[in-house]
Image (cartoon, rainbow, N blue to C red; front, top):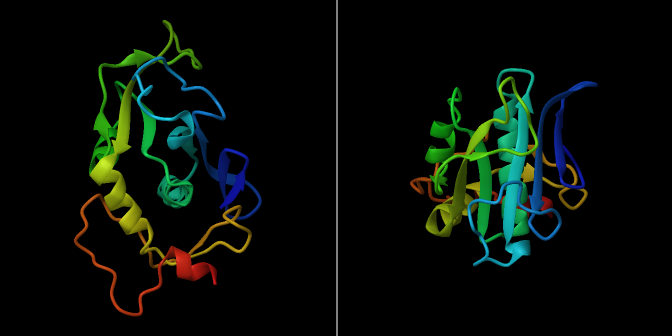
Length: 179
């Protein structure tokens, strides 16, 4: 996985297989006017957007990389906008600890036949974010260039928001993997 500014690409071979963008609200404004996140400092909220993948499983690899970067950047909240209809992604995000915030809103950066698509804002914060952080720290990763490249152990997978897999003695986490 390679990170260029706020954009992620999963590359295996010569072409990208998955992509996502991640930025804090100090770098770029929130994509939609809702939800109201003014209670947070802009640099403490990460927005993740523009997910796509071309091959089965590549999207999950992208999400693991995004989760590692989220933990590295230590936000207070993570915001996503998911398609309000015709998408089965809500279940995955709910399992990871995201919750719906408010009602669906128009997404201003896309058009489809008949107008702009509607998206459901979802947020990850508090204990759910702490559980994700704990689970990400269990992943076996290498970050040889200060998180510009992230290499995963093939046997690792990111677990949902439950915290039922305690770190065992001798198990390497993301901090010790860099050494």
